[in-house]
Length: 209
Length: 224
Image (cartoon, rainbow over all chains, first blue to last red):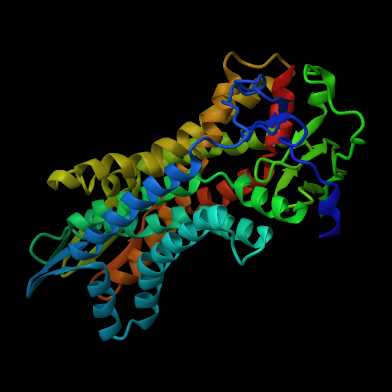
């Protein structure tokens, strides 16, 4: 990128940027005079925070898969289904499409997010094979997709409130729904704690050295 | 159209004075994603100024964005409140039927012990936070559009609204409905209530709202 050579960061200019409203202030200013946001050249202990939220997110994801997400009672049978069990059931009944959607939203995306955040955080410390803009894109995808994992919790909520037909059929939420929601929320907080300016610091230092 | 911003390349010989907190710094803009500093230049109509280094959109002004944003925010409040109370989906199987509102869906978790916290969280994510964000936008932009001085604590209100952005999940809830419908399609017959269409309209409005929102312009207007 030929243009990047002339770019200067706020830190290099002896300034501190507000990540909330993009205003710049002299280094050492405590709070943004425009929006009141706390100013930090780089978020303090950003990586520790990322790892802390990341870890509780991963931990919550384990019971989310072990406990049942939904329990369904119909006239003939009553069954409890975990996330993966439910998808397998759907696939067995020929609903391959939806099984795939559920596996993507509840298994592939959460696991991918854990991996991506870990990669970004490790990349800041140990360098990364990916370029700065690639990692920035990865971070934006993680931030964008993170909220969509909540869809599974909403599906459970809708089913549990809607399918209340007395003896004919009824659905109630299982404990996994709580753990899954917590896992999604913790992972979102982990991604939000990440200061993406750290990605560029390492890349720019590398170029200068 | 995306227009890369011109880098701020002041000659190294004149570093900015450390106490130049005045008009000089106010004319600069720093990319919140990668810390690159630019001279803030308003892009032309229909153009969006992006960070030359990481491509983050920095300035994207729209004509009369304030009025549009307020109109959308009012619509969001009306729709969410109406959609929360009206029946959302209804099902029918073996002669029995049940209708459910958005509030019922949120409270589905309330009956079952420890999962009850989730009822609050779901209600917040799909009802309270979207409404709160819309109200904050009206509060912040109302005086700006009317050419009045900003409302008290407008800056804090706008910052809160922006911080809440990722936690406003009404549109995800609508897609969740589609998935839920397919799941129970062979178990029962499903009818859409009026609230479903209101929420579907809401999704479109949320997308429009994000398209019109230029944070830089809002902060600029709150400065005076």
